Image 1: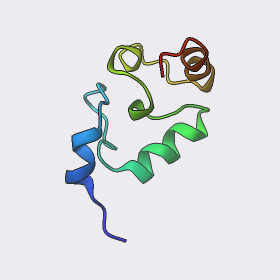
Image 2 (image 1 turned 30 degrees about the horizontal axis):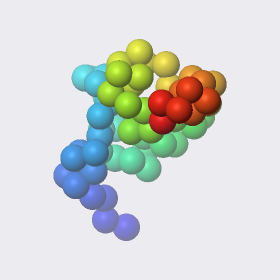
Image 3 (image 1 turned 180 degrees about the horizontal axis):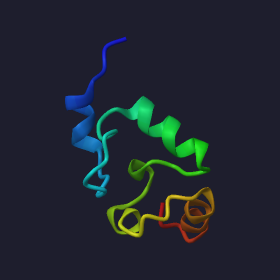
Length: 67
């Protein structure tokens, strides 16, 4: 399968600068799910900048209708 990293970068809002997975969605999702997290693209820019990408944080945002 061909990686679409360049195309994916248009939607990647990860603000963690040394991240080696930016634009490589399959690696990013795999990495975060192992830690009970979601990738940055599941969050608004403001929520992403908190670096709390936990399932629980996402659920709170859903309950507050912020996602």
